[in-house]
Image 1: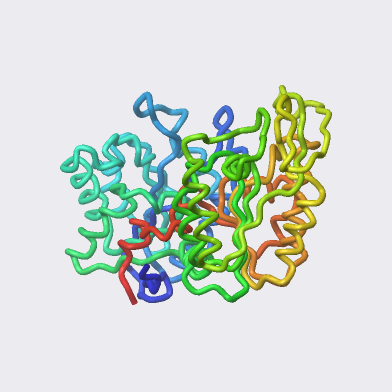
Image 2: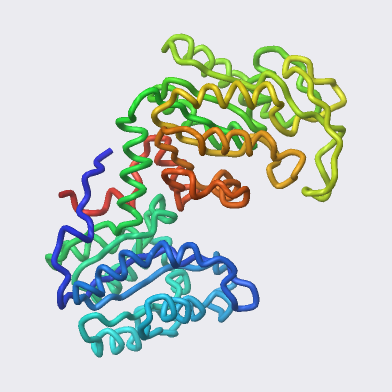
Length: 410
């Protein structure tokens, strides 16, 4: 995985039109942004380019846009939020065509240090480059608006979309620079380097519901880490693969052989693979998810046939916390139980607390584990919380991400 990419610090943007792909896919309720984390995360890169005297053209997708272009998924609220945070005017091009005459005119009227925000890239319907010609045409039009390109949207970096990866081809053709922004650089430094050249001992913690979602991650991390901890719903498939009763717990029967293979692989490589030794069980899944629930703690090898495992128990919390204590690098992806429920969040809290108290470099791989850290108040104690769920998983699998790969090497 080539990780030595040009960043915004590696080219002179003064007087240049710079197209920046951001991740402004923010949650909206009645046109109001309910969480502006992603907007705040993009500010360092935008401010750096403004300071350099670039003409800054921002683009992003928002939502899934299943019904075609619509005001509910317009980037207008983002433009307003950006104006407040940057303390300067942001010209919003509301045209659903994204790169039409309105965009061309807005860019032509820019002075150095000005900011333009284009409309939701998915309004074109060609963002996902299907059919290929349409995606290529959109990427080419985006490139025509700019001299250089900066990708700062790690949450979209695993998608070879027109505005993420294809646009770089046309920027290169015109002699421009394709770089990564500060947010992308941080993801590459932490996630990429944790997997490629970690400071040891390296402990990886995987949780979440399904084994299927993490097949390649387990396989790749076993080769890279010293200790692999498995919790959450996926642990029950591993327990069943060892021949234990798991009751009504979540299980992926098609992956039993795979789990056996992975346990065998760990043994062969001399890696420690830790599974829960005790489990919080209940009669059934909580309904509503955060409703009151009564749990018992039983050995993981003796889950009653009529019970469902929903979190790791206190002995396992201690086991996992001890494994983290001596680590120098820890990567965590996926909660240990149904963390949305206060009674069943104890395992996830214990792991988060163990990470917060260690001197190791602690990296949270996006998705539910990031949500859990934020929700449970541990976010500021972690070295890095990834902004991309799917992208961070693919990074941990050892895959090349199109949005990273497409940037110029130093």
